[in-house]
Image (cartoon, rainbow, N blue to C red; front, top):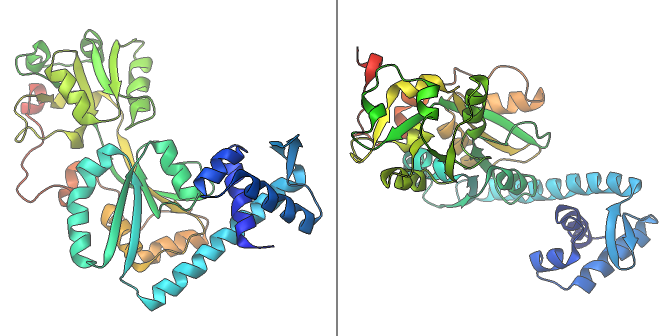
Length: 343
């Protein structure tokens, strides 16, 4: 039995039993993967996979138990490597952050500027992915931490904590009829074609829920994963935009007007940070988590880990408006105050 065999089994499960994908992912041959898995089954004297000819078609009952143990063994092996690195060179290494476009573009820049000043010998890799891909990268050990709005909750293999809350806001071109409307409603918004996020991105479920609760069916004309793309099509007149508030800076972009009253129409969303439940975190990984979620610190995270992640965090979760550390020092108000909020 060797770690190569264990990795092949894990990869087979992660790739829906497609050995061609496994071979490509691990830079080996399909026949080599199949041989190593069969050798492991022979050593264990049980079948991990159900087969139809040469194809894997399922995981046996015994195989599910084996896969669970393999996951723990490979995680602990990775922890041993990290433990060695932790003591050998505490502030040198690599930090892989799996995140969405919005977080990479509008939340992390100022934090990472300060992080690389503090840890100049740490290489940072940003992997911009969908929320579902972020979860898989964390579970497969391909990323150290994940930052997103959707999909990070309810995964027993992850520890997930809120970073800050934020709101959606409607953006329109200057002179649009909604820009001067004092009492904005969801019905007013639903009267126009809408450009907003794709279904699994950036709190889109909160947008859908708000319209559904109001008994309205919005005309979602175009969706995208990138707020900059959404704003481009709003400028072109394809529709009004609904984007995350952190994607709007009216001082830097006078071509769009953010309607501040629209913020009260949608439930607040929460940006969250997650990491593998059993992972050994490097010193600088804790510092990055503290940067994105200042109410957390290493001591509170370790305490929460001992209690299964239950219980209050170390301090209040702030809103994006309260998080001045997420914006450049010279940044001013994010919104043009219109309607009742101008009073």
